Image (cartoon, rainbow, N blue to C red; front, top):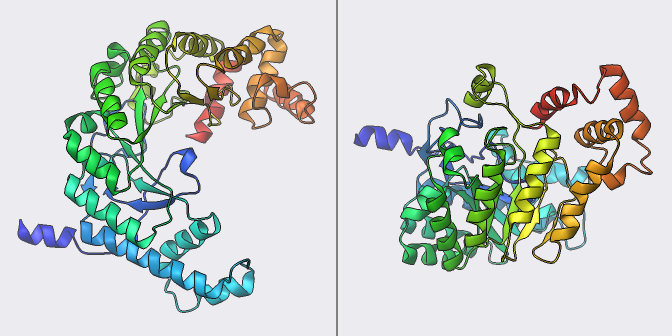
Length: 388
């Protein structure tokens, strides 16, 4: 056993995991764990066939020390107000072996982005022992005292089992935002997707994060209830969020990707994914059902039919709902143009269509691929697979 532990703890260089939230695009990525300790969700293929493991604290601290050293080198070469031309970049790279480039590139990109935030990878950093996580956070803050935000993914099931005093210690050490994949507040939907949690546990975990003094982002997945549970999915999810009152509610529309269990269920006729129109109605019902909270709604992903559904509750609620209503006011043919143009990246909301210079390109694409109101959802399903 000791032999195996020593082999696992060998430092093999700086590591970065495969994903991070879109809102962490400018964050420095520090890998605390590898892959996902749960890894049973039917809709997800990110960590499948990959074994979960905890990285040793010593190895994580080495990554942070490497990055700190690289940042100091960058500061010495790039003077305040300077920029990175080819000569500067060549000077920075001089003397580095290829294996060091990942860490050095991470440091350069973070320096260029202002060094304001750090994201802890992979899927559930809070599964670490609280003392170990506090050690890592404290070292991060020592090396980079001016960082404004340190964030991480976490599972509700994990947070619900952490002692509240430990969560507060973690927050005080510097972790100030948690991203939780709620996906749904319906126990039936959660069981069907094998989320490994319940509505009650989601609520317990969310309230614990807020009580610890950390910001909370809850991710919701329109479409995940299928056609059968669309209404229940919307209303039960809103019900859970009304109790939690998270800082952010982020929409991530369901995409059924090849190689997932959910894809196999679709093939067997056990799950029927809603089309865009039905999901739009589901989102409208969801927004209508949010009540008594002051969360920010964020629709910051290309998978979403409406990227312009962004606002603060309760004051922006009607404005966000009106975006969906505008979609349904479009003629069926124009609705198809919007759906395709949105997934091509040309439109963010229905209001973008009126004077868009890209409208002719969208019309050409629809003619070329024979897109009609009848087959548009099947075409959209194929387009969405490119973004997952």
